[in-house]
Image 1 (spheres, rainbow, N blue to C red):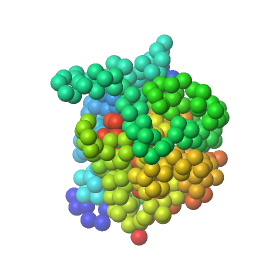
Image 2: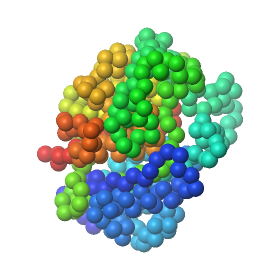
Image 3: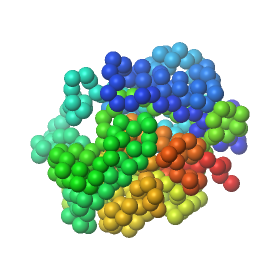
Length: 390
C-alpha cells in the first residue's frame, strides 16, 4: 500500500490506575490500557493493525499480547526495548510505519507490575539482574548495583564540575509536587518544601528519597493513525512534528562525559531540526525524571539554559507552576506515577489536547518530550503539537 502523503498523529490515549494495585499482571494492565486508548479514539480493537510492545524491566509482556487481545492479521508487530526511551522510540516507529503505508492504526503500550504486596518499593526491581563477568562486573563490585547508586555517581560528577547543589535538586522535587497537587491521577499530592527534601533520608549520596522517582503498577497505551482518519475520530489529534534518538555508549574511563552531557543533547537537536523550530519556540517540557538530577541535566542538554547552569535555572522557579518553562506538569515520575517514558508522553498528550484541568498550561503549541533509559544510556525526544505542521 502506498504511503504517499500519509502523516501520522496520536489519536488515542489509555491510562489505567497507577500505584499499589495488586492482583493484576502486566498483561492485564496492557490489555486495559489498549482498550481504553481505542475507546478514547473512537476505534475498536479490530481497527488496530499494528502493535508495538515495551515489555518493561520484568519482560512480562511480549508479542503474545496479540493473542491475548485476539488480534488477527496484524501487519506490524514488535517489541521495543529502549527502557525509558522506549515510548519515544515507539511513537517514531509507529509514525514511520503509518507514513509508509505499512500499517494504518498502531497501538503502542507499556505496562508493568513490579510492586508486590508486603514488599517495599525499593525491593521491586531487586530481582532484575543480569549476569556480570570480567571488567563489566567492576562497577557492581564497587557497590554500583542499582539505578540510584549509578545515578548518584552522575549527579555527584555534575555537582563537582559545576557546583550544582542538593538544594537545587530539591527545587526540582518541590516543583514536581506542586504540579502533582493539581493532578487527580498523581500518587503523591501532599505539598513538600525544600526543608522536607533536605530532611528526607539518603538513598545513595547525594540522592535523597525525594530525589527518586516512584514505583508504580499500571499501564499506558497510545494509538497512532493517519491525520486523515483521525479527523473523523473522537479526540483531537496530537501531531508529531519531530523526533530524535541518541545512545551515547559511555565507557568507564577517563574522558567520558558521563554525568555531564547526555544523549538528550543530540536527540533534542535532531528533533528540533526535524520539527523546523528552535528551543525558544517550545512552550513546555515533559522530561523523564527518574531522579531530580535527570530533569536538570536534560534541560541543560536541550539548551534551555547553558551547560552547568541547570541548578540555578530550576532553583529560580522557572519549571514550577507560573514559571517561564512549565516542566512535568502532571508531577512527573517523581510525584505522579512511574510508567517509564509513557509518563512524560501521556502528560504531553493531555496538555496538547487542553485537558489538563487545573494544571493546564495556557500556551501549549509546542511540547518537548524526553525519554531516558538505562543509566543515561538511551535517549529519545519528541516534539508534539495540537496543530498540523505547515
